[in-house]
Length: 634
Image (cartoon, rainbow, N blue to C red):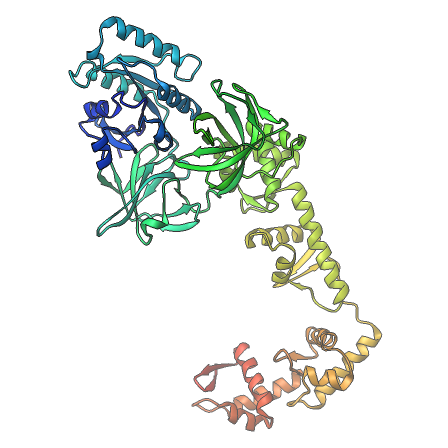
């Protein structure tokens, strides 16, 4: 695929300043699609149009409503914007939503903009100059300070070509979104088409999406498939970060998905009700933000209610930036480094925003030095400390990829941090499986495995060892199976335990048969040998000798390992000579057509109770093969 420029240009500005008319002059497309928008003459919801650059690339333009009642819609459109087109009418100048939209762009981290002073045909040069000065003053102390300004008229066409050229120049300077990261698409529109089904649209924040790819719809956690893709009304096999994408999702209804949901790679992100963030309260905010106050949290295309809790303070002063915890009333899907906007609960106005530092923190107290220390490590670029925090929180081995997801850091940075932690002894690699675990968690796991085996050996001194799967379920239930196996393998290589087939035991543990147990075992073997082809079962032996079945079962297992008995079924043991005799009679009695259970019973001279388990034993040991109701000699 050719090296296209993939980015989003987003409009911003006060109502009736000509954003939609200007977009039409640039692209030839009217972005007002709702009947109510046509009737009222104002934009209510988001509009979209492709804008073609001189190299043939098509970038997306998102046109947002300017009315104060629809700022929530503007916020949904502003997410993912790479280059802002701030629109100010020459006959009005800077207005309330001009200021609010600019504040939102600044809070969302938009660093490039072009200012279009519209309706230039309605004023003289002096007025144009005054408005330009007013705009430049407005941009001071924001990330958009010094942005190019051009006067235009959608009526006369004046300045339109110059604006196109400036937009193209600024587009070339935009830093592209990360195509190598996992795909993430905040959904801003949902609709159904006859014969096609449910379609969602949004700006692809990162990664790429391919046709027929399996994705996850969050926060519901539902697996979906991208059946078909469109970019700028053209079918595509793949869509990339920075593009406006329409995705057809078969198998779900219009009611299963809504604006604010996120399409992403399965297992990448986990929805959260709580997050730690660096929060900035606007200088223009009318009053401090009190601890626990209810507000509106805007992230991606989602708006939820929540409360804010500054860390180590009772309130946030206007113009200040502090660490804070946000506790939300609905789930959000975010990653470290994501930007968000805060609006007051009532009256509704933009008051601040910030950057996510930790999307899955623990609940903090007002004074919590440990939490502040972790916050600083996660937010200030101490990468090794950050990875050590995520390792400790996992409480189990994790992959490098999982740490990349959790931290939001590039793979190379995570790998370098792990090397540093390994050298310091803070991170333990589990074998060659690409798994790492916090040193403290590793020590706890080793101690727990050792203690479980010690208890087992104390309660069952004659057993060969503990079933590996039973041990894993008891001690490492929260671990992935591969990780649990890796830990046990490491412990066996370190000679602290032994693994024999499916059994695990502590190194040096040995069966200790007492004189009384040896005598009892001899009695068991004698009773079984006394009735070679009809030996007493475990339950019969338990009743006859007045001993518990588990104790006798362990003694019989020892006799089996010593070669004195053969286990034919969980309840039945035979002397080796008796099994050899039964096999000899089986071979002698089996004709070309095979042998039935009844025929074998008669040949051995025993009952079905013993004949059937013997035949099943011969099947397992590959003496016979079962064909329907008969056995044949292999």
